[in-house]
Image (tube, rainbow, N blue to C red; front, side, top):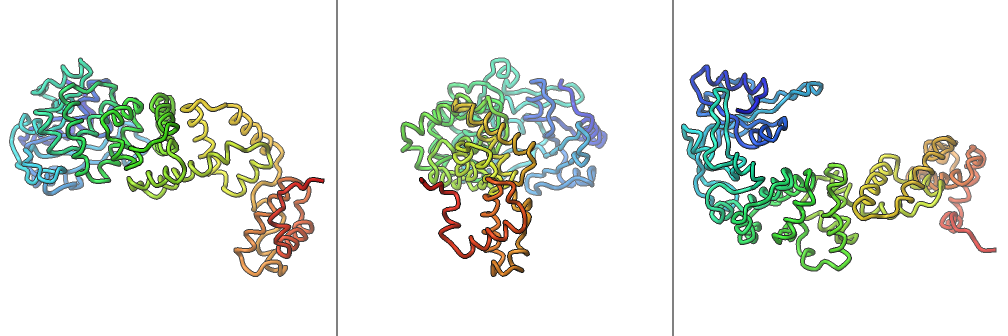
Length: 433
């Protein structure tokens, strides 16, 4: 019997007091057996939806059709023991006609039938406070063997819902288990049916794979099973020798990096050249912030890599801001771990940053002795857009000569920049004498 969370025990007791069965099922049981403390708990019961709403009036109804409610105990962020519990009625799935979901479901009264619809044996175990541990498909034995095996006939189960192919790989990346031979053969045989899976489902599974403790293993399995085409599209068929080498290095070393999803996604798409990498990322329709971070890493990592002194670092900070620099700087450290780049570039940048902080010299537009209002009131600029552009030029002046950061000098420079476009355009050029 697994150790149940106190709130899970309370939920089960409420159902038991009303005469219903209730079991912890799926991943939470597996994780408890692995010595982990799950936050998300899946509970299965013979109580129907009306019963669940009556017993747990505070619960959120997640699905009327599937009779699933959620009890969220995570409101208190300071409570490390808080959980989310999803309670679902025992059910049997009908036929899968679209390769995504069963056309019909039938509610049943026994846990064994409910477990039979689940994907893998290590996810098809159930337990409850009475001490009855239910494991009809040998999930505990497969855990001892460190094996991922599908419930039922592999060809049939993967054909009916091909996203299970990626779920098997996600489980391997999470547990470091191997995939059963028959299950793996069925995965390869059904790989083309991944076309039936939604972009959202593929993205969700890929994100979980790449953020997993054994992401390198998962990525290798994706490539070996010819699934990369569903991640990066046609580019998977025409990777250059350099791109293949970059991916090989990523697969070998990604587990050495911190499990930060956006950073790891950036590492993945950086293995593809510039515009193609951005286009590949667009395929999975990430949220706007994630897509921006990927494009930021692709565009700005080379700029950060070639910073040679405090003036150039100040210029980057002034143009892109400290938050962007911090993100790209941290990304570059992960990039070095994966691809073995020279650490001296990172050490040097830290030294430059320390010098900037200690000196207290002006870096940002806000540090200038003049502002946009000064330029507009002085008749130097006619609009705020022009003023902002000239202010950024003035930061370059004070980056090189901090003593020039006074209103008289900067107003003089601003007038010259506004009148002489050539002077503004070539302000960083060192002419040969």
